[in-house]
Image (cartoon, rainbow, N blue to C red; front, side, top):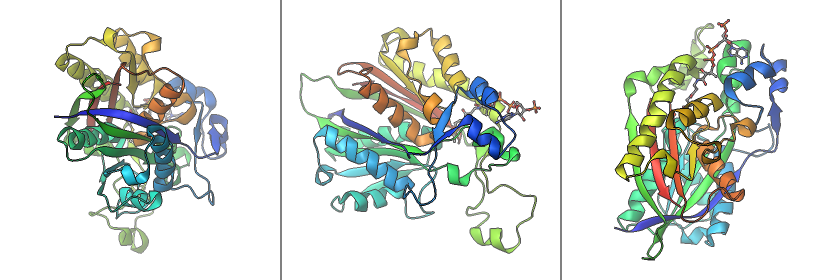
Length: 337
Ligand code: ACO
């Protein structure tokens, strides 16, 4: 079995910044509530005409990751694209990146695991490297969520949380026996009985788009995302530590061995709860939800890229990724960077 090494990281966010106070023009909310409950101060949202789509932002992040890896699109053997907000119903956004980057006719697959999407995507990419099937895999998380939010007061419990953006990494075969860089293990879970606690039901196979235009009830808003926030929160604070401890145990580590924990940026209060539960120091946790909001599948690669740019991740560090979200799905990756 080969080792997998992260050789490049990149991120891209739309230029337009929406501060908490800007949201008051649409809904009954306020800066104090949003900061206190979520830690979020601002987020980036795409704007009409700015050209940003889920695939184009993924491509922009991927170009930076490729350059940092010292590779070109022709070196990539597989694209794994995580998103809950693809450009189209079908095909997925991975194939659009294949075209936009000018890769050869390599395989491209989309991962539909929402906030856990990047953890699932990295685990998937890792299997292809470990078995020797591919040498370089591009792993992307990207979201345009702002265009699908209910910006009225009815939707404020969700709308204030989500942001747009993309992050990417290149995962490469590590054949150097003296180089310990590797994805040590991944731990993935799901519990579909909670599917409707955090969901976007319409349109879908059960309620296809034509129902929306033909005879949709005026008081049915299930074409907007729905989240039973409190309920999700209670599950998140259990599943995050569980997934992290499961991964640490398998590799004989403790929370104190972690150089940097990069949790999916769902809510600053969730991250703080996890930190406290695991007895970790501030410098062991990466939080940047304050600037970007919850960017779902993009949040981990955005946070990881920033951490690397700030010198908070160095070669040889023990880095742990963990996520929880819609599905419910959750999981972790234990990484020797
Ligand atoms: N501004 C002002 N007031 C608000 C807002 C807002 N934006 N949103 C809700 N409120 C009000 C509610 O109406 C409610 O008022 P009431 O008490 O008069 O009824 C009050 O604030 C409290 O609302 P709660 O929903 O109970 O607030 P809570 O403290 O639970 O915070 C939040 C909500 C931030 C959504 C939190 O529950 C949370 O973060 N949940 C987990 C999110 C998560 O981890 N998601 C998973 C990843 S996302 C994915 O997978 C796609």
